[in-house]
Length: 379
Image 1 (cartoon, rainbow, N blue to C red):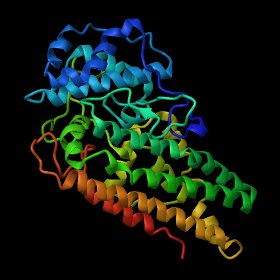
Image 2 (image 1 turned 120 degrees about the horizontal axis):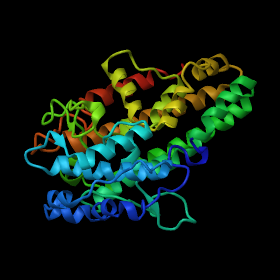
Image 3 (image 1 turned 135 degrees about the vertical axis):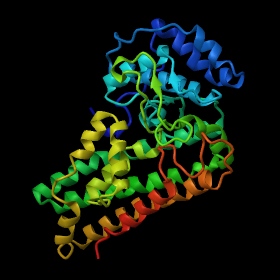
Image 4 (image 1 turned 90 degrees about the horizontal axis):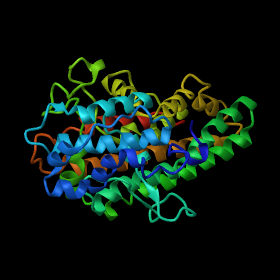
C-alpha cells in the first residue's frame, strides 16, 4: 500500500539488515565495493551458502533481500569476463523466489536501486539530500552515491503530488473549483522542487565517472549486445533452463512521470515506445502500478479544465504550467542522457553509449516524450 505522505518511497525507512540467518549475504553485500576492487567476487561467491528464503514474508524484509540479491547478481554478471550466460543457482533460486513474492522480475530495478536503497542520518529530519546515504553500493564513491540519492530526493519531493492527484479527481467529482486549484498549486510547487533537485546532478556526479564506473552494473539482459539471448537462471524450475530477457534498471521504472502523464491526460502514440513504457510497469512495485492505473479511464482532467477555462482561467494557467514543468523535467533528463551517456567514449560492448540500460535507443525515445508532452497544452 502507498502511504501518500511518503509518495512512492516505502511507507517506513528501509531496513538495514535481515538478521543472523542471512549474515553471509549481508557480509558480502557490505564488502562488495572492496571485493570488486580486489577482483575476488567469484572466490567469495564460491563460499556463499545456499539460503532458504521461504521464511521471508514481510514486505520490507523481502525488499531488503531483493536489494542484496540484485546487487550480488549484477556484480557477478557485469564483472565476469567473458560475460556469463548463466547465473549460479545459489543466487538465481532465492532471487527468483523473492521476486515472485514481490511480483517483480528477478533483475535490478529502480525499486531496489533507489526506492529501498537509502537511510537517513538523522531520523528526525526529512528524506532529502544532506540527510540520506545509500544502504548498498557497487564500487562506491561520491558519484555513485549522488546519482542515486538525487533520485531518492526527487521521489521524496514528489510526495505532495501523489497526495494531491486523487484530491484533484475528488474536486472534479464535487465540482469544487477552489479545491482543484489548491491541489494543482501543490502539484506545481512540488514539480518545481523536483526540477530543482534534478538540476543538482552535476554537483557531485561526473559524466565520465558515471558512464565508466556507475552505469556498467545496472544493465539488464534484454536488448543487450553481450547477452543477446538473455540469462539462464540455474536451477529455477519454472524457467525450464531457458534464458530470460529482462530490462536493466532505468528511471523509466519510476512511477512519478507515468502517473503525471495519466493524470494530465498526456497520451503517447500507440507505437513501440508506448509498448516499452507499458512494459516498464512490470518492474514497478504492484501498488505503484495500481496507483497509475487508477487515473486511466477516469474523467479527463484536461477536458474538464478546458471546459472551465473561461469560468476559472487560473485552472488553465496552472494546468499549462504543470505540463511545462513536466516538459522541463524531461528536457533536463534528455540533456543529461546526451552528456552522461551518448557523448561518452564506449570502451566495452557491454556498456553501449547509444543504447539505454533499459535496452532502448534512449535519445530518440526521450525526444519523442518531450514532443508528445507539449502537445497537450491548452490553447
